[in-house]
Image 1 (cartoon, helix red, strand yellow):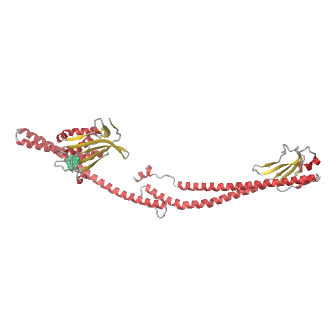
Image 2 (tube, helix red, strand yellow):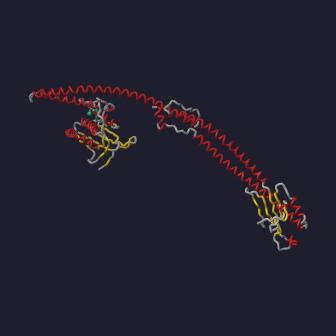
Image 3 (tube, protein in one colour):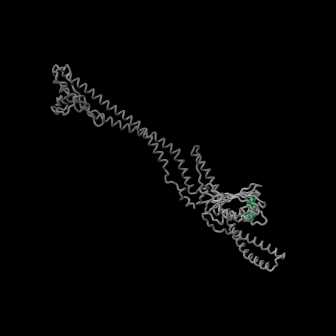
Length: 499
Ligand SMILES: Nc1ncnc2c1ncn2[C@@H]1O[C@H](COP(=O)(O)OP(=O)(O)O)[C@@H](O)[C@H]1O
Ligand SMILES: [Mg+2]
């Protein structure tokens, strides 16, 4: 049974023992990484822009200085020094410097081999050339035919030459690579410094205790409620452990109580079963001789003249035998309840039939029986014969308690769902004397009767029948005013309609 329960859906434990930990650690790592990543990316971009700006500034200064030198050489009439100046300008990160005529012909260059080359599409405006990284690697600067130059160059040319400087981007690239390395290292260090304490804190404060909790819960899922939770912590998890311990304690207590009740019920049932068998056997043994006696008495009675006083005694004996026979029948019905044959039936008409059987008696006693209006139906799945007997027994008891008139009221209605199932409730009230409180708990027991000639089986049999239908009987007493009986049975596929 234990294994069966452990496999049922409600008890199956989910195969995700590390999900919470993984989720928390992943989420924390992601949050830390994003936050630090944003800060480091901003830092990296700002520093890289700085490197590029520095390079641009250097290039501009170099260009200005070179152009000024060239112009002053020209103005000083030292045209011959131009080539020397250009070739002498070579520095470590300078790739090339050239002076180009507006037509595109290289006038002189740091690379002598390029002299007389033609540059196609030479820009006559200032233009900065950048590499794929946005680092400036070259510049074209025009040397204009300003007023001092015009004394030699005349006035018809606007641009005398274009100065072109090309730089190597090795320096800035190295700086950027170093910056990247530094940023990544800083990011890694910061990540470890922030994430590690958060992770460790989680593992210590939450993960460990949760795993302990889960171990015990797993045992419980297999039906072992002897497990206990370590509740020494004074935080929420400790509180949960303490609550679970208490809950387990309660479950253990209930389990023990249930087992005890179960044992009691079993032994009671065993006792009842053997008593029932005994009762049935005795009843059976009595039935046949009774029939024999009754027959014999009838034969005797035939021989006795009509006005003989013994005739009356004979009749009295026959009546008593009849009553005995009734009791034996009831006993048999109680000891061996017939099998239910439930059909869809209108409960109102079942009650109506039980009333019909008692109509003459009720009329004779001056008892009025009020029933639901004709045409009112409450359909339920029930055994009509058996339920008719239930209503008959209850009404018969009520009639017996109103020898000099009274009222019985019967109502039949669909009741609220109990445990997800619709029920039909039949309420039967009388204006008898009510039920003494000490009889309340006994009246449904077999052979309990307060009547001189009662069998004490009417309500016991009724209770059996109703319980076989999955329902129950309840009794209420209004001392001095009367009694109310409720018969409640599940309606299953029942429908109610007012017509
Ligand atoms: N409507 C009622 N009002 C008061 N007492 C009742 C009523 N119905 C039953 N009882 C009590 O319950 C006892 C058991 O009833 P029952 O099982 O029908 O057996 P019997 O009718 O043979 O006594 C009755 O003897 C009576 O004391
Ligand atoms: Mg009775």
